[in-house]
Length: 229
Image 1: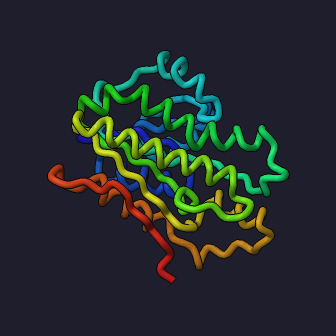
Image 2: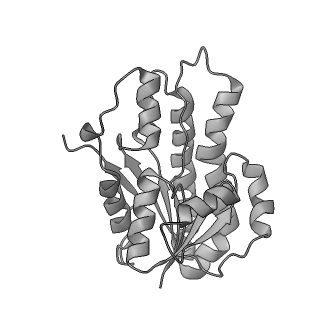
């Protein structure tokens, strides 16, 4: 039985991935920001275990995980959580920049640092769910895109450093996907939210699992997922 640690399992892509892995009998560790949220996200996944660690406070993750029991091996760490807050560079505050950099970049960097021994032991895989904004930046997307460009750099460097240890690293770049985050983006853009024109989170989950399940004689470094209509 494979063991996976997932961030962002409470909604959207993360929830879809967690559900699919749970259905096939894999062992799940779900990271939540606090005990209350941990209870909520585990309620529909009987047997799944939870860890508490706030991605908005990456400098506290080491302390938080040191007080909880981690497995000796992890077959994958799936970084799916993220936050977004749009605005022109001329108006973005340092607080807004820092909030997105903390959750979208610094927390994944710290989490993967802390969990590398378990990934190496299993010759496992780190999967970073990025964004189309990790490849190009549009107006008012500066802070979010910067965090996601940084996440791409993190994944690329980690792949080069850990290939000798048998650790695979994959970045997935979904387009606009139906989720609470996308609802917030539409509100900030002043647009009506219509999920029918967006990617279904299950489709992104299928792409992620295909990278995760690829036989060990191959690897997928980067994967772009775009709306089919």
